Image (cartoon, rainbow, N blue to C red; front, side):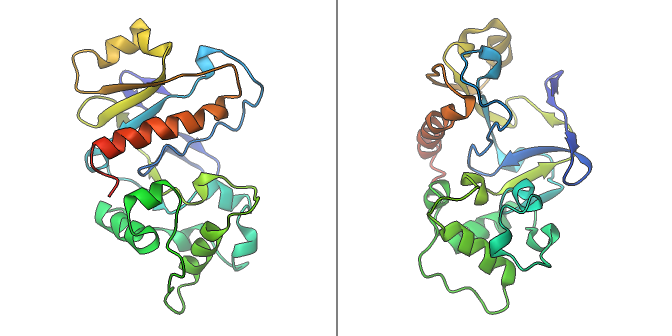
Length: 223
């Protein structure tokens, strides 16, 4: 996926288009394919924190995991005629910030998946109503935090350098690898580490969430 300092888009079966998926303000990716406990370095999770304002222009932005909707994960909250494009957000950072303020009031609440209680949804805003109702759901359900993570889709190569990449969250053992050090040495890219144990890869997500949360608080963006 990453060659010559670039992250290259891969074919997305949902949109039938080469895309790179990012999440706005949250390390939302979940590895669904590997669920057997292991301690292989090659399967450990790495999170890249980009400066959104310096990314290439997104091709589309969704307020949740589009793959989950395409697989009918949110079906009970939706009108049967609802389509993915009904939920598209504008691709400017100002519009994303307005969306976050409307549903969460603050970036901190958005990060913690805490929507505003008793929110008054304007009449006729059917998509907003659906989104709000599944974000309120605190019971057992087939979806994870990505139900409320803003999904950013890019259809061009994503340059991996200090102009756009702010920090990398890596397991402690990978931070000492020469191949990684060669990428971040003599740059402003920060290295943040977490401790990884023998487990399913997705179990490291909580450690990554905590590390990213501390970093974003330090940067003053969780307000």
